[in-house]
Amino acid sequence: MTGLGGLNPSSGAMVLGLVQQQVPIISEPGDLKAASEKVADMVRMAKAGLPTLDLLVFPEYCLNGLNPKSWLRDDLLCDLDGPEVERLRSACADRRIWGCFSLMERNPHGAPYNSGIIVDASGEIALYYRKMHPMVPLEPWEPGDLGVPVCAGPAGSTLALLICHDGMFPEMAREAAYKGANVILRTAGYTDPIRSSWRFTNQSNAFTNLAYTASVALTGADATGIWSIGEAMICDPEGNVIEQGDNSPDRIVTGEVVPARADEARRRWGVENNIYQLGHRGYVAVRGGATDCPYTYMTDLAAGRYRVPWEDEVEMTDGTSVGYGPPRDPASDKETHRTNAPRQTTGG
Figure (spheres, rainbow, N blue to C red):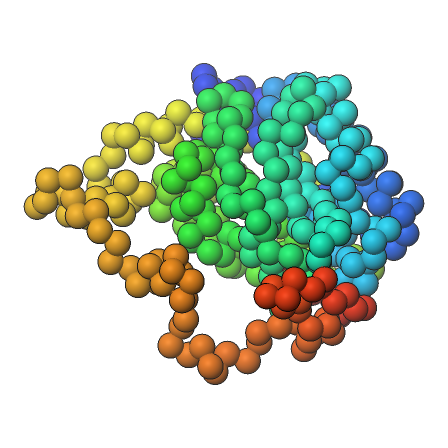
């Protein structure tokens, strides 16, 4: 039940709007300004059209578009305290609504960050995240350095944000849930080749963490004619899809989630309470369950020695095959080498 798409919210519900935004075409600074004005206007119009809305979620690249030729141009990047973000914050404050937004963030010390923010209903930034897993080799972004933050949101929610390719790593959603997130947002720029993977990972991330997931991608064609998927989805803690969109440009898919239901499952379930049971293996046989870490990949990663058995046979280990320059060597702390961007990507 989703309260008729949020028209009739249940007790304790948070009403979400997931914006299947038309891909913005960004080639000049004026385009970036226009994109931020459009997003701000959509915030205001959506709240006027559905006053019960608590949180409006825009996709990855909602300001900067999907054209790689514009990604590394300094005059087409954003700053956290820049005019584009200020417009979005003002729109949230004007309409007393929460918003989730994407920006390609200028980084004076290397490649730009692919960042996301959650803005509260007073216009303050409640969560600030940098994408941990750029979609290599197609994306040139610096890997995120802020971890996976969470914040308190409307209706007793604890929110986390994953950006596109992040959601393909089960460890990312698990980290968000481990920190208490009961509603995991996922924003994306994915195009058609990823449609099936998008669907089942959104469902899996919900079920394996007893969390709601709310996910949305850009849609429509960009300058190359390649379509993004849209595919707004809300999944409940059992992994069921309770709202699903399509690829209609600028459609806002709405629905409710009740964070307390996720909290209740985490506290009351026995069977399939997997996020608890991961650290309490076999508690029927062993008081409190086994609490060791038997997973080699976890211990190796923590020790800085992560290495797959086929490590030396991996062919793609940088972005030179798609037109980027050599990556910076962190040991020498040299600035990332920026070149002309590669051909059109699938977004991620």
